Structures are given as C-alpha cells and as structure tokens.
Amino acid sequence: MSLESDRAELAQILRTKSVKTGKFTLASGKESDLYVDCRVTTLDARGAVLVGRVLHDLLRKEETARGLSIGSLGGLTMGADPITLAVAISSSLAGEEKPVQAFVVRKEPKGHGRGKRIEGNFTPDQPVVVVDDVITTGDSTLKAIQAIEEEGGKVAFALILVDRQEGGRQNIESKGYPVVAAYTRADLV
Ligand SMILES: O=P(O)(O)OC[C@H]1O[C@H](OP(=O)(O)OP(=O)(O)O)[C@H](O)[C@@H]1O
Ligand SMILES: O=C(O)c1cc(=O)[nH]c(=O)[nH]1
Image (cartoon, rainbow, N blue to C red; front, side):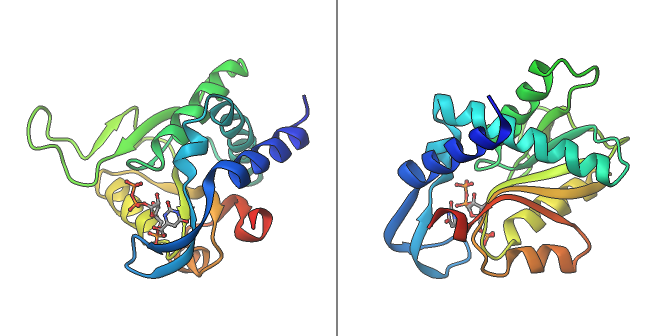
C-alpha cells in the first residue's frame, strides 16, 4: 500500500467520523460551527494504523530535511496521546534501528508518585517533536512546548494532524517552532 493511498484513506475516515458541524465552544473559548473530533479517528483501529504511518513519514521527512536526529515525540494529553503512540509503533514496525520514543505532557504535574509533568520516554538529550491533534489558536501546542522546555527539552518542530487554518500555525511559527501538518481544514471540509 502506498503512502498516498494511506493519506487518502485517513482523510476519508476524518471526514466521515471526525468532522462535525453544529455549535461548539473551543478550548480557546471561541465559538465555532465546526469541530474536528480527531479522537474518534485516532482511537479507531484502522485510523490509528494510518495516523501512525502518515505522521511517521512526515516526521522522518522533516527530520531529514533539517539534518536532525529526533529522539522522541509527545504532546499535551489527551488529543496528542494516541497519535504519539501510533507514530512510535509505526517507527518500530518499520524496523528502524532507533525507533522514535513516546512521551505524554500532563496538563498539571502529578500530585503524587514521582510528581512528573512529562511521563514516558522523553529525551532531553536529543531534539523532540511536539504533537497535537488539532491546532486552532496554537496555544495548547505552545503550552506543551513550554512544559518540554522547562524539563530541558529542545523542540525541533510541531507535528499536527489537522490545522484548522485559524492562525495557530502563525502563532507557533512566530515563536520559532516550525509546524508540519498532515491535513488542513481545506482538505477535510
Ligand atoms: O490550538 P488551540 O486553540 O489550543 O486548540 C486546540 C486544542 O484543543 C483541543 O484540546 P482540548 O483542550 O479540548 O483537550 P483534550 O485534548 O484533553 O481533549 C485539541 O486537542 C488541541 O490540543
Ligand atoms: O479549538 C479546539 O478546541 C478544537 C477544535 C477542533 O476542531 N477540534 C478539537 O478537538 N478542538
């Protein structure tokens, strides 16, 4: 199966399962008549496989173009989580010698146990990729970046499933972090 057919199939699952119209309040407090509920696609058995393949390919292409060696990826829980793990699994299934590792950024540090804000396999010694399912304003992605940097991480770029084309990309890029998005609103609506 080609990457092109994976991309087309994933776009179709997003259109069918995730794109919703109605009246929604977004994370930013903005009102919208569109909501892309990516979780229904990223937690779909087939959708997860395709998300892994499509975003793993984008990650490796961007890594090569920038001459980097990415150690791990992750983002603010929970939209980012299934995407993060799907990409890591895809990387391992591709037989890579050093598969990209996965981490989760908590919204708040855990109040007990090890008290961590970042869980899993975070690589402060190697560049990391920040993940989000959707960007609208981009503030959630920037929140994840701030947490990653506070823990000593270096963010190479942001890897996004759907860019709603409402200024999020510009917001994140204006702070110095390139954005790579698999789909834009225009691809899905
Ligand atoms: O670009 P922004 O304006 O920040 O909006 C996009 C964010 O909103 C959603 O998260 P939400 O806060 O709904 O949390 P969830 O991932 O826990 O569902 C989505 O998963 C993005 O992270
Ligand atoms: O801005 C948001 O909160 C948002 C928009 C969207 O389309 N999907 C989503 O999960 N969150």
